[in-house]
Amino acid sequence: MSLKAEIEKRKTFGIISHPDAGKTTLTEKLLLFGGAIQVAGAVKSNKIKKSATSDFMEIERQRGISVATSVMAFEYRGKKINILDTPGHKDFAEDTYRTLTAVDSAIVVIDVAKGVEAQTEKLVGVCRTRNTPMIVFINKMDREGLDGFDLLDEVETKLGMKACPLTWPIGMGQRFKGVYNIYAGNIRLFSAHGKQTEDDTIEISDLSDPSLDTLLGEAAANELREEVDTITQVYPKFDQEAYERGELNPIFFGSAINNFGVKEMLDCFVDIAPQPLPRITEERSIEPEENKFSGFVFKIHANMDPKHRDRIAFMRICSGIFERNTNYFHVRNKKKMKFSNPTMFMASKKNIVEQAYPGDIVGLYDSGNFKIGDALTTGETLTFKGIPSFSPEQFRYINNADPMKSKQLNKGIDQLMDEGVAQVFTKLDSNRKIIGTVGALQFDVIQYRLEHEYGAKCTYEPVAMHKACWISCEDKAALSELKSRRRKNLAVDKDEKLVYLAESAWTLKMAEENHPEVKFYTSSEF
Ligand code: G4P
Image 1 (spheres, protein in one colour):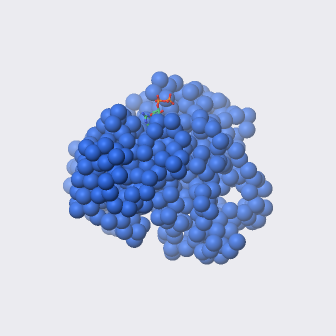
Image 2 (spheres, helix red, strand yellow; image 1 turned 180 degrees about the horizontal axis):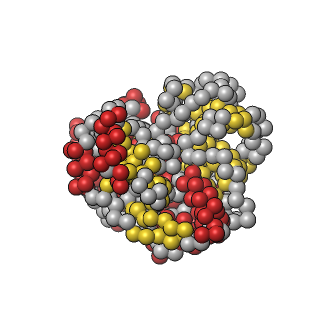
Image 3 (cartoon, helix red, strand yellow; image 1 turned 135 degrees about the horizontal axis):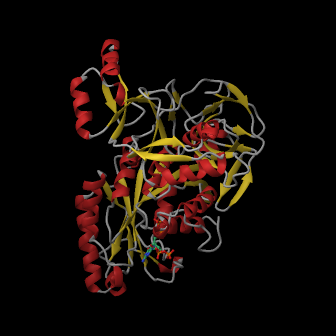
């Protein structure tokens, strides 16, 4: 098959949601449709169960599971579909942000009873800044929840989306009768046995057809007619280009656990979701069809076995064909590397691959050569954009608890930061290191892993900190003034970029006012 045909065959996407909305359940149903798994329950949730939020041994176990579910690939209607798993737990939000750099579209799962929740808002926000095309699946229609129109309102106001309902629910909870497929013009009747068949689908060419009253009962049929009438008046028609630009969001309703409404969405997804898209680098835009291979690392996963410190770097192929045992150029290290065991993950199975194409994700065994954001090419120097670090939300000084092991500690910190577990800032005035994380869990994970993988011990010390802001300043004099006046607030990140550590929102505001030539950013890419 030609490179072009391989590219056209692929759809690489991520499912995002607030924990418990049904992401794992939906993923599993999609894999069942694709034949990648045969029984329900085969996909282990990588979410950290509520009961385990303070138990980091459990997190370590969950980390092991999430290697297997990092990428789940399946074939459906002649397409190769790659689902990239995203951790739902908010303490691992940064992992999710980075994974979203490797997708071409996303499916957003919302719980009908809870509506739009905080984590969904955050993640959709990240996708919106990149104009990632998004489809919404409103889940758990077998339960009582918000009215369909109120949900569409929330989707528009809280998520800033332009809703375009492509299916519409007929009742909900006890009264849930099925969905009307606006996109395909048929009705699928709900039964909670979880095995929707073609017999449950009734073609409806015209909603005024009196057989609808017999099918649904007069009241429900009339309600559906009225609602669909409102939808056609109020909401835009589906427009492929607007969806691809991230300006229109198809909405589907269903119940993942009952495998209901999922096929409607999958069939539509296969029709409309974008194939692998170009990627932006500082040097130029990379087109997938280019013959020369290129890819970037968006996620690094440490081995669970502390005796083997190798890691798996997950690389998204951006252009050309990636081949096993072929020399490629590691841009940051300026050296050639080849891979004898590049791996692709399919649900719980993994296979060594000979070739991979744009949109595919390969796992590369790594002994410490990769950092997040690293590029591999056939020789060209490319710097992929859009993989920024964001300001952490929690900060602590990290101290060495065993002076004999400072080398191990520093190595451990460096490697864990390369993996993206957290961020480290080294203060200019004292050289002390501050660890910044999104959630408190990572502090325990770091301490545990430093001890078990690197033989180093650390302690933490509280530090009052509000934000870390990356700074830029064209004016050399203004920059040196900031450096001399605010030295105690300045630090460098792991790439030696200058960062302003603000104790409070007020000190940040004052710094901005007192140093107008200096720009402060809450993300490392500006
Ligand atoms: P997540 O990955 O987004 O965190 O959610 P997950 O799929 O694990 O689903 C969260 C809970 O919601 C699970 O119940 C799951 O069974 C349930 N669920 C998913 N889809 C539906 C649906 O369409 N209708 C209803 N009523 N429930 C649904 P749990 O009790 O937390 O876990 P479990 O013991 O069933 O695994």
